[in-house]
Length: 64
Image (cartoon, rainbow, N blue to C red; front, top):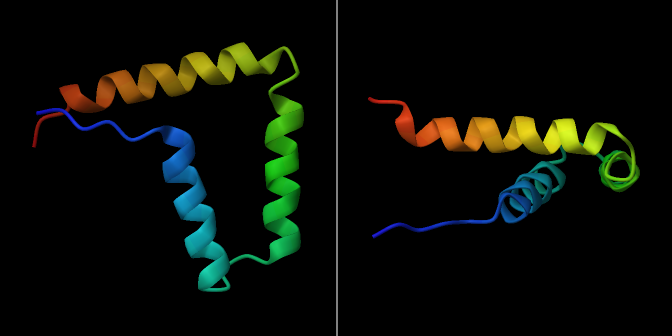
């Protein structure tokens, strides 16, 4: 059985944990989130998307 978790959910959990343990402030988290939204509207969005897709496709092929 294969279980898939959306990458955005994993990133949201990571940000929530960073905020919870005060490793990053709320202002920094908002700034990074806004940067992500603006980055998605640039020419770099396709490159970032392909990179993330390549990494996530390669992860199951890594053996223990």
